[in-house]
Length: 238
Figure 1 (cartoon, rainbow, N blue to C red):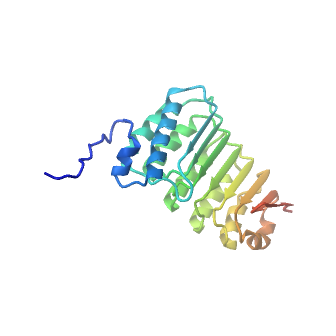
Figure 2 (figure 1 turned 180 degrees about the vertical axis):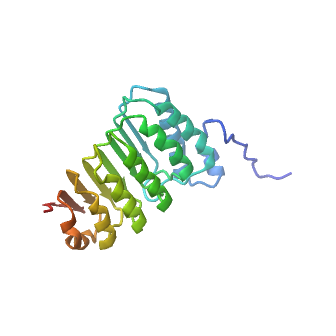
Figure 3 (figure 1 turned 90 degrees about the vertical axis):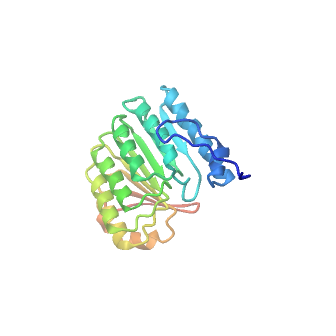
């Protein structure tokens, strides 16, 4: 008889709580396992309490907590609970990897909330996921502030989709891009093309963006903030 502990089976359909010990048995580090446990508790809180004005979900820094199919029932339960909850003004999700299967659940739910602030960072967006995000933004009619960070915009098709999403947006006033790459003048220029109707654009943590900004400066007429380290440069692009 094997001396190794037998890992119990977990439902992939029911949102049953999965403790840190189980994630460790699945090969997760202790820190990630504890973060997965904490994430479930936060998700449950937002499911159970309907008075929240802000929904903030945090995993870990860097490239985010790895996704596992066992979490899909929890995402389904959360977004089912949030659907139509118009009291929510802000939704922020940081440091949790989100594949398309989760985004396809999340975005329809968020469209029903009338969000004013939406932030998503370090969730492992690839080109396909970025396009889904852009489609969500384009179809939304309530968001005033959009923050995207931690996932690199290094493809012209992604830059074009984001540019088209924010261009002429009926409610969007401010776009914040945090450590999103944008070190290529053509890609930055494509993003900026869609920003002419905004009141404010913040570029945070882009070490090489000043050079690209100089190349692309004539494509928009908005307030631009370049934030690198503790230094903030404010310019009105004419």
